[in-house]
Image (cartoon, rainbow, N blue to C red; front, side, top):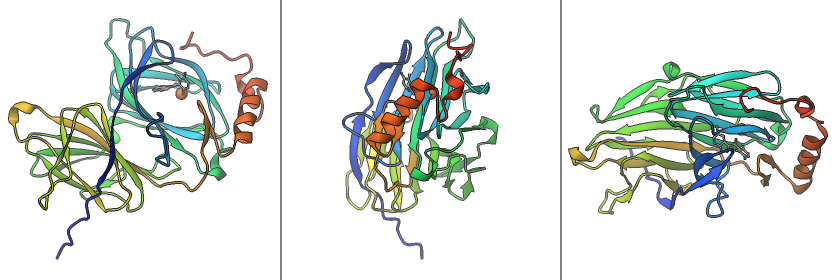
Length: 304
Ligand SMILES: Nc1ccc(F)c(C(=O)c2c[nH]c3ncc(Cl)cc23)c1F
Ligand SMILES: [Fe+3]
């Protein structure tokens, strides 16, 4: 007999309000705001929109991993070590900043193009990896397995982790995370197991999603641009779409990660385990040392 999955209850629901970031970019930040800081290992979630002429010019990172998921358009990146690349709709870039990166992230040259839209998730690095060598891992759309669920009413792109018997192709971040891109057509019902004890959230990209319910409990309706943070207890999250065929599709990402048992002291893109660590990062960045040597006399081409 299959034991019924203990569903995770909702801890809180947050609206991701729009704010400015970088040079003329707009982001909807739902993790990393005063109302949601402690969701280890997650430090920030930005749902960004960047038009040609705007972007994220030269800036540093230390002590975290950034996972960038392009939903529309294309973004170029270029760093102080000469690494360059483009991530297009459906692709992801996993960047481990480790001891230090200085880079720019700008819309790919398409002057008459529309907005470039995606998600950028910052994941904390465990203490012993804070000073590791930086690295990049790209995951192209074609490499991401898809699984049809609920008689084809739902589709899950398994970016990282497992869903309904399908495994992602490879682990790309040091800190274990699951990232599932879920498309629900009208009437879809999906129960998604998650590793127990991990922190987990869902961010609604399109349409309305209904969480929980069953056993006589009412479902919770969550609208677009809202982030649903789940309790740590429980084995699975349950999500549904409205039955009404006129409602259109619902799209959300379900993300889970292993909590890190360490202090988080953050000053912008410097994320360490102590104030001294943050001071040191600021000093190193300003004096081009301990991982920031290549920032001296460097300017990106794309961020000019
Ligand atoms: N000022 C400032 C300081 C530190 C940063 F890391 C950034 C930054 O690069 C981003 C912050 N949200 C993002 N969403 C998507 C992308 Cl592609 C980049 C960013 C930035 F703009
Ligand atoms: Fe960056």
